[in-house]
Image (cartoon, rainbow, N blue to C red; front, side, top):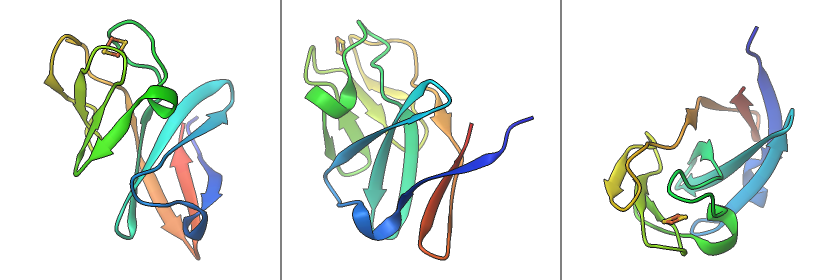
Length: 103
Ligand code: FES
């Protein structure tokens, strides 16, 4: 059964930074937007580049640095090709300054 797992403290995460975390062998990218945090797979669905290595955020989108695919970081939806498959996104909750994601 899925459960929420603590992955970071909110105050450790900076806007415009993509933080990679590994939860149960799953590589996940965290994005901070104001006091909200969103989580998607860290692996670009186009050709497997790591968003936390080569990518950057712009507003509500993350762009992969390899071939410029873009995704909505809240939903994982593709907003610019060449990627066609969305990123998996993960539910996030913040409790007492801790960031938890459901995997
Ligand atoms: S691997 Fe991300 S756009 Fe190609």
